[in-house]
Length: 113
Ligand SMILES: [Zn+2]
Image (cartoon, rainbow, N blue to C red; front, side, top):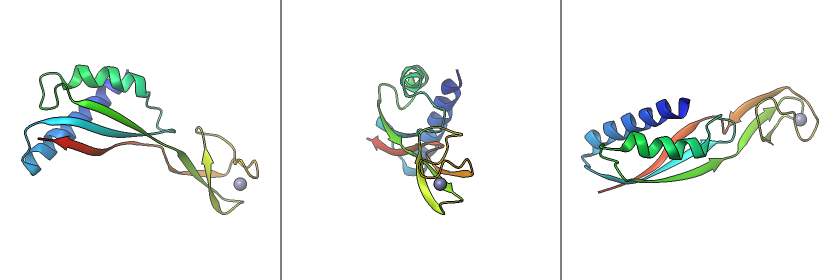
């Protein structure tokens, strides 16, 4: 399950932030998960609790925000919404799409004490 290593890198970022910004406890984490990132929100929830155990984010609430997939369509010359990788353009049916959003996972916000 690659969500486990994703949670571990989330924890690393939190620890770095804690050092830089001098906080000791994290009570909530907002994670933005792109529709095209291939990350399973449910698996993240499961791994999150396991990975955060004993860390400064032990017992922290995990809030997951969805980020819609977005791609640049070459023929249409505009951004279009896509639900999954290798989708076709909803307007012209082209596959000449370049993903421009919703393909990653990132920490949006931390609630700290
Ligand atoms: Zn198009």
